[in-house]
Figure (cartoon, rainbow, N blue to C red):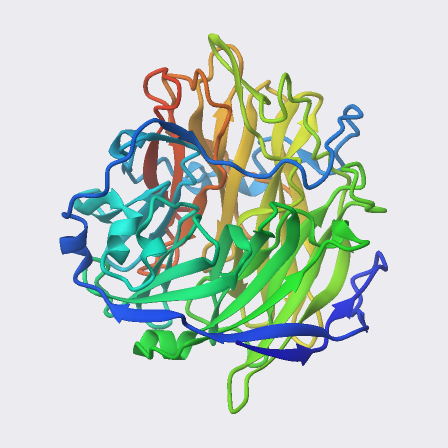
Length: 550
């Protein structure tokens, strides 16, 4: 391991201005601790997995900061589910599901696990889904081609045996630039921890994979979130020291060119940002940028990592904002990197502290049970993904977070940042909070844009009377009034049961865009068909705007 020094930026001004340089922040340069080539995934998925027993609620530290609910503080970007003047033509409404099929269920696990962390990605011919702790490969008509199988089986025979474990927090990505798939999970046993990354050797996700393990040292890399970029695969983590204290937010760049080529000496550059005196800046996590579409980022464009801060969350934030960090990497001839805060962008007021009781995760009501499920809004972080597109004259990033949109009613705040050509940093272009005031909670979202700049937003939906936890989505056309999801709401699947014991829900969902037409959205989330302690299942579906054509 080599430790180098790079400049870091800091800003505290409530203006979208470049930050001023301060003390250098060292980064770690490491080489993959292990590498090999797997047998075909289709064969690994058919192998028996190690036995396990009992039920398991994934642990996530609740001691990073106190959470105190001081009552509803308002929302400055509330919208109705409406129809704009342009939406009179029913063809301009977001479509009902075009394809909808069952994904992996908790019953596939040898023990029942909460939450599922549903995540998925669409490619030209396949859809790959990961959950805690399974993966499956489907055709785009819903035929299952491989799995479900434990993610650890993908690393069977790998030199770092911890990668074969019953671990979790998976992420799957499709890299359109190189026509490859990534499937990842962390390790949990220690005393050394790893990010385990498998990248397909061909466009076929059921084929062989180059397998890598990148060390995070003694820190447990909780909540890893990945993004595809032109020269690197970026990821963020929430890192915990051996004594379980919060060590800070990790930011990593993995050397894409070597990984795609199957070079065993692929390198990683990492920074660790301790909370220090300004824990509001990094919050409980940052999201790296994940590139959508065929137009690459402009040369020299950094990968942006974005976090959120709420001035009522007890982290010392002076105002509600998005915090935008820049990660710059140059791998040749000598690796160089910088990571730092580029701008704080004030946003409309939001309230991230939901009135949860009796515990901090008992938040969203369900019909016919006193058990409430998690909103995760108090975590000061946006929800997967931070989706990037280059539209030529400007670059756009969209993301979302769950909030208390109305008193004791969950909603989804979404954002679009834009960087016009020639600008130094992105600025806020529009924002909105989806909460129609109908008593239905809408939370745990994921947002993306098609090639025309139309947006879709998927999320969970529930109330305490007649809406069982299910999956819905909405959207807007690029020309709609700013801040408005104007094109109706559709149901991907209605729930018919509730979660009766575990409060865990999410922790994230995934909306991606089909590279075949760059128009069709694919979404995966969890829901219930039958009431049970934690017998979740997942759904996968696609939809689009009729005006977006190949």
